[in-house]
Length: 347
Image (spheres, rainbow, N blue to C red):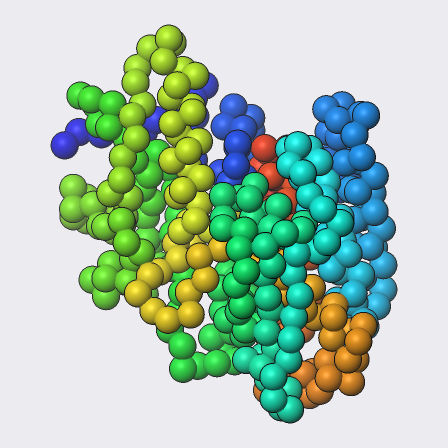
């Protein structure tokens, strides 16, 4: 079955960091951090909105977080996350109440992540963010341990802390869109190049709706079995992109990334317990809220967590979560992708 890569302006269309309404026309924006760029974008696109105010507050809380110890920083980190979410919702015109939309509880007396409960509520800012990301905005309860299990940016630390659970994330490269040459049927595909994962056992772990493409027997190409139509001709451009964006949004539920100097893409496996079918943005929001509650109301309990076996995992989340979240929310606000610019060493 002959196929070809779908291109735009001579470049292949790749899976995008923004889940909703990605701007496939633009090249990656190279910035040290996204704060100033998004601020400039808001001035140009939403000058009369409260969005810029929320973004500035988020940045102020971000700066404050960097100055605080880990037993206190979750409080300001959460308000950074909260205000960045408000900025996004204002930009997208999604109504939200002043309620946070998430709460927590603690069971037992032992300092254990499984005893820390995170409760998604049906109304408030977090449910509004869920609505934007096409997730259910209903009441659900998760343990903090399960949320950490489902976050790709700390998954390695999780597996080293709790060795009895299988890996959830399979590394992939070059996730992009292809089509048949003789008809409009199109789909997403990617390659597994890490030899550790080049085996049938990995293929068996793929989420429902994914398979190995046996048209490439010498490579480990995986593809989504669901298709969308990409029709040739200028007259079909708007309809093509509507279908692509809908397909892409569904695809990003399984294909996720870790922010860094390079684009690190992963596909989230299926078929194991404790999988949470939610975006990293909503899970990070909820987890940091829980930690902020501990920092504010039960600081001695939070301190005991830092004396337990999961001390490193908790520290990794607090250290990494903010810049992962801000990179993701920046892409959602603007539709752009961001990368740290490379630097040549001076001679």
